[in-house]
Length: 142
Image 1: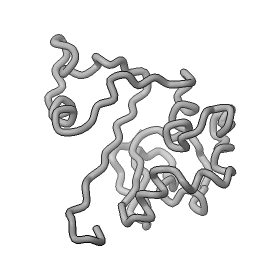
Image 2: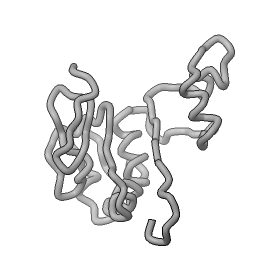
Image 3: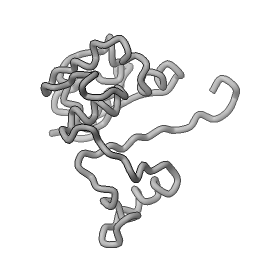
């Protein structure tokens, strides 16, 4: 950081269709020691609720910080929310402007090249890694 303090790592895990007790920390039947350790050392949102039950709309809401009625991502693979001027004030963009490497692993479903809006969302067909600066690392093949 600019004042000499160590930069904090930021990791957002946002799986679709998980209940609050999907990890072992909240359910004695399930064993997820690594996720439990992340929960112990990080922040858990135990009362998180989505405003839409559709996965891509929910992710658009998380990344844009806007209601679905505002980001208007109603059709799969059409990132309408990216066209608004307020998108540049979201947490991925602000972290990137502060010097963080911002990447995405997993499904995104907006299959278009929006690097002018989302430098962290370069699409790689058949891959589960989305990086930037040309450092697309393959985490898994489809």
